[in-house]
Length: 220
Image (cartoon, rainbow, N blue to C red; front, side, top):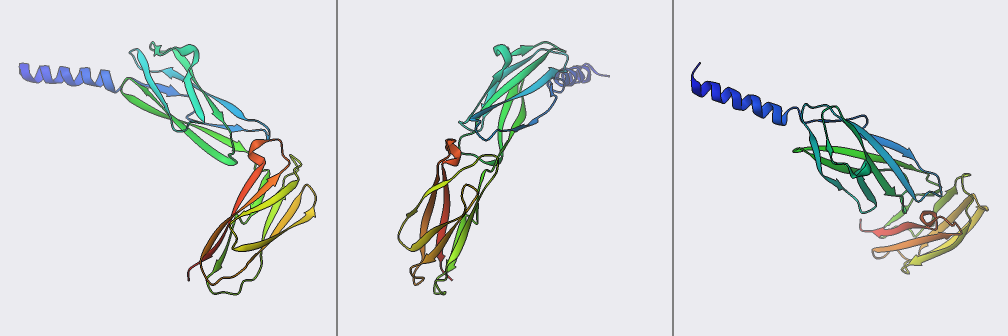
């Protein structure tokens, strides 16, 4: 073996130690969190261990949404081989509903680790469908949006407003606090139109105070 070959082999070995073994092993990379109807923020923890043979330093944690913050427990950034730590993340639930994923990326020793908070937010108010469509020139027949409210949080519909003037609408109470419908009729279908319908409730929880639907007259 030549001296040049020995040197190259040594460099490759050192490179393998520097890049291949610098590793944070996370117990879970996706953490599901169930959200209470009136909960405005949630916290998720991502335990990890340095499974490499060298110290690993967290250089940055990047979050994908302004609604999320994240950091290492006790602001500790460097972890010796075999040492464990926790990344904690807080997500503001805002007006989200349903299953919502918010991710973050942990950068350490040249590697990147994607972590996900999977918020499961109760869909207390359901509008079905959220979009009503007519085709230009068709008969301006009425169509209905059905609003169903979960038993988890009694909510009453208070007002319905329309942004635009291409449609007439009639709110109907089917069962107070549980079921409503809105009957929508185009004033004309001779030209395209797009209006927004707003449903407001007496809920004290911000994300359930207002719901939005869409009304469209589209081209053929």
